Length: 396
Image 1 (tube, rainbow, N blue to C red):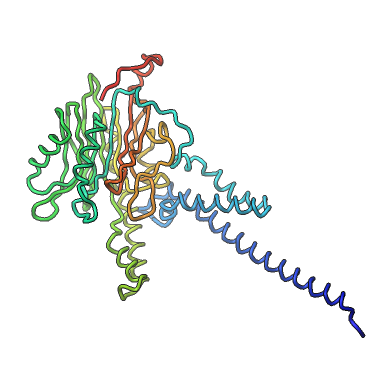
Image 2: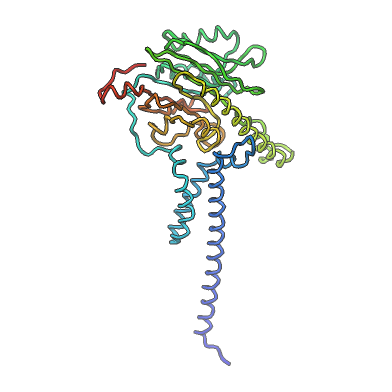
């Protein structure tokens, strides 16, 4: 039997089309499987705020990565739309919609802030020990102090404050550098034979009382300072909660992966996992202590500092309960405050209760530390109502 050339050609093209269809279906199924995994990771991130990491820290790992998991799901939505698979796009779209409020804790799309309308200006800044141990950073100590003096906040909360030598002499130098009549509250831990580090609250307003919340077995610090502004007294909580302490083990792993060291990468990965989960668990215990102390405060509170955790975390949810977030209320754009060796994230906060109204919030993009300084502008609620929208006298 003779096969006509035309039939052979049609048969060959049909096989090619069939092969192409099989390949497309396979690729689509792989993409769909990836999409499902990303949605599951997103749901685990949502779960992290409800699960105490002191009990189990596994969901907290995904809460830490939430901005990037959410971004990956947005990419999946766009890819399905481009591929004209609208029904598949709904998988990630629905998962993102469930947690839309979480996105607002990272990014604000509207700007209602007005720093001119305020009675109180508070600045929080993790200064990374003034970069004392950073060989590549030069003259940043002076630049940090210049920045703070320029902003001239009425209340300044510093984390990772560092002084070498006599702490009293260091305090005097800090006051001189910032200028003006200042009141201080320091909590320092000895580091080596001649240096100390810790946290500090510095204010141009009189201090009525100084105290701290003890975190046993940890170098993490929380202090509270009762400050008198005009006839009002506020309690300011300045926090530097447990870090992950990742730098050494991560550096070892990266060196090995680059072929610079011999060893077991699995051991180092396990070390990173232990550091992460240990950090989550420690912060959970610390935030519980701070919350219990806050509930005894006789004054309106402002809670600030480096929480070392993201808005999608047990730490943030617990600390924020009953409080407002200055960035969420008056910020604009991306809220990332950390800019160090790890992926950018939001870990520095200013929270406050109902007696205040936040009129504006700024993230100052000064690249002197691995954190950006954050600033919130406040008015008392009774004064906001009394002003009836009139422009108030600006105070520092």
